[in-house]
Length: 353
Image (tube, rainbow, N blue to C red; front, side, top):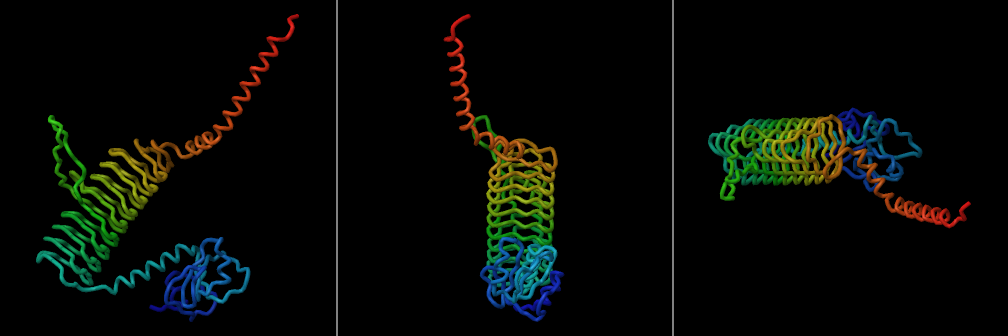
C-alpha cells in the first residue's frame, strides 16, 4: 500500500510542511528510516536524527523548531506519538478488512448466526447458538463454545479459546493463546482433608473496546460474571480469577495476578508481576508499582502504592532513602559512641577540686 503525505495529513489532522505529493509505502524508525518510509519524532533526544534520516515523510509536534534544513516532508500535529498511533491503527484496520470469507476446514454448527463481512480462519470451531457480529475476524484454531456472543468488528487471534456462555463486546482484540471462561479456582475443604470442586456456572463478560494480550487467562465466575469493563487493556500472561471486575480504561501489565472477587476501579494502573489478593477493592485511579503485593483494599482514589505488602509510594521512597543511608548512619553512631566514651574517661580522670 502507498500513501501520499497529503492523504496521511488528512487522516491524522496534521499540517503539511513540504511537498504534499511525497509518498511512503512502509514505516521506519527515524534513526534508520529509508526513502519511501514514514517516521515520527516525539522524543526530543532523537531530534538529531531528523536532519540525517532518509525518511520521506515525518510526523512531528507542532512546537518543534527546526535547527537545520531537512529534505523530508513534515506533518505537524499537536502530539506526534498519539498521531502516529492513530495512523498505525488505521493501517492495521485496512489490512484486517482485507480478510473475508470462511476458510476450510472449519466446524460451524448449523445454529450459528453471523453478520456480514466475517472472516473465519481454518480449523476454527464455532459451537451451538454462537452469535458473531458484522466484521468479526476469527483467526485459525480459535474455539468458541456454545452460546458465545461476539460483538461487531472484534478480532479473535489464532488459538484463542472462549468457553461456553461468555460474551465479548464490539471492537475487542484478543491475542493468540488467551483463554476466556475457564473454571475459577474454587474448592471446598472436606472433613477427610480432600477438596471438593465448586462448580463454576457463571461466565465472563468483556465489554467494548477491550484489548487482551497473548496467553492471558480470565476465569469464569462461580455465579454471575467476571467482568472486564470497556476500554480496559490487559497485557500478556495475566491471571484474572473468578468474579473479578476490572474497571473502565484500567491497564494491567504482564505477569500480574488478580485473585477472586476483587473489584478494580476505573483508570487504575497495575505494573508487571503485581499480585492482588481476593475480595478487596482498588479505588479509581490507583497506581500499583511493579512486583507489589496488595493485601488490603485501596480505598482512597488516585493512591500510589509499592512493595510487598504494598503501602504508600512516597513513604516507600523515603524508607528506601533511609535504608541506603544506614551504613553511613551506623558509622556516625559508632563515632559518637567513641567520642562519648572519651569524654567520660576525661571527666573521670580529671583531678577533683
